[in-house]
Image 1: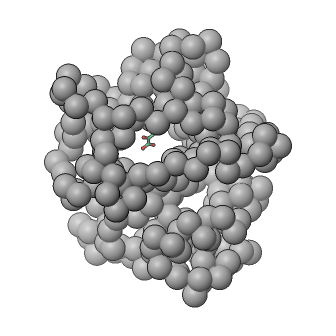
Image 2 (image 1 turned 30 degrees about the vertical axis):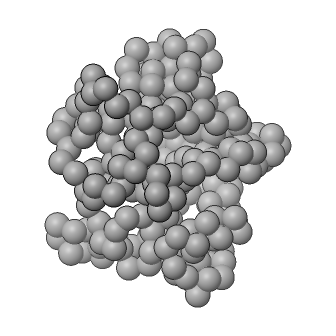
Image 3 (image 1 turned 120 degrees about the horizontal axis):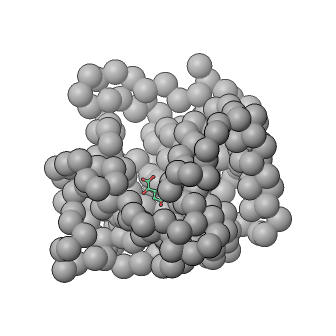
Length: 229
Ligand SMILES: O=C(O)CCC(=O)C(=O)O
């Protein structure tokens, strides 16, 4: 992690665990009753854990207490979370970016855990990473073809693909530069993204405290059931 800025854990979750998460997310989406989801190339549904008990329990389980405290210290929160579904037959890649490019925070960096609900492949738009790019610190971003961008698609360095089988995760720093490809297949590519931060995170620009509603660890122990406001 120190050297390349990311790592993967294969088959961390079983097929049954991923089906449970998938079902919780489907049920949540059905309750929102958003229309025309199929017509969008990428569907982002944000802050699910704050609003759904099953997804919150998923994010607060021991393995995320272990991962977040190993890298961020004994007191950690769920800073942000979103479901990212890529619909079939897409055309656009998600621009190279640092997650923190969307909003600088302190202390920095925080941790992104990208969870493959189904297989993420080069064909259906898995993530690619620029190894070692976190060492550059927070870099300049501009408005790209799909989201904010900090590295061009025609740069000779297109990093490394990070295919993941269902139930596997990729963990990277909020300053690790990554992108994802278009989904060229006939099936939906499904991912859940959980971002963990140390307690007491602030927006760099305003200095304002970012209050998480989902505590993950306190003094290295699970903070389950602790829905903070
Ligand atoms: O899931 C994807 O395709 C990319 C998502 C991503 O990079 C992000 O949400 O920052």
